[in-house]
Length: 130
Image (cartoon, rainbow, N blue to C red; front, top):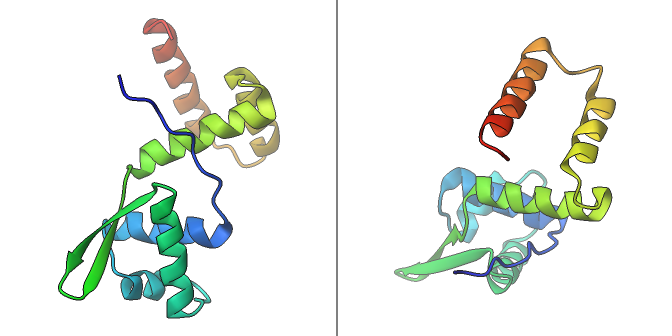
């Protein structure tokens, strides 16, 4: 059985870099730099990518003189991990409290389709015994 690593805290720019790499599936520093709004210097992005690699978020392969970086987990897995951490920190692990907060904060922007989808997911979870 593999142990799950806790999701590291990511700074705003690190999240942007991860998003760029997820979108591109794999990328060089130069390719990531092109994806960033108001980009920092090349060396700053390279340093942040190395930090992300040291945190276990990225891996690389060498392509000639360039390093090509790839996320170590899918965007979905990273999202679930971040959500789990958010639930633990702000809602004492309670999914019901997290959903209640989402509904409270989003009540003006929720479309009927959103509510129907949520209701369907709840029915499926009940049927699966979750």
